[in-house]
Image (cartoon, rainbow, N blue to C red):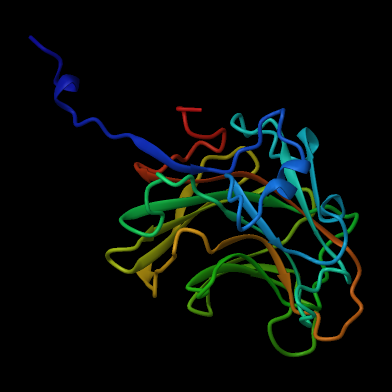
Length: 258
């Protein structure tokens, strides 16, 4: 008799865009990107006046140790030189750059994965609002720091349409793993999350949202609302950045195809 397992449907995940860093990737690669030379995996144009290594760094020490798909993680730094076009906000952000034939990253049911961490050295300022891993229309994003009032706020929040749906204190040295669960067709978004090497779990069920992306407006990095403050440098560390369809990958080691 044939096993009933043979009749189970095959469920798989497909990585539609990968922001992984192999051992050969260097910071110089970011400077090769331009509007006339749009090479994957990232666009790099939202930053301040200093050379690229001032804002970006790559090292095995910068990744979540649990990740098996990244040989390196990336440090993305903001400081008081990070004004873009003389704005009062400080910004250092990399954005997915697709190959010409890559699938639309704004249709169907997709998962936007990333891990983020901070350290005690160059820690983020809890007195200032930070926008992190956001889309251009801000239908979903992380925020950190003071959003209102006068008190410092060491809280990392997941937001939908400007409303907090989940939050946790930000602890230096902890890796926070996320997957935005976005159904672009149904216009909903939910959240999978974990820390360290733990598997992702669905912690917020999907809720209605104005889901939209042109496939090249997901800002991997930080926007800090300084509003004239002379705030110090901050380092944020990123790892395991990718977009997939199909069954969500809950293992923070990364998708098995890699």
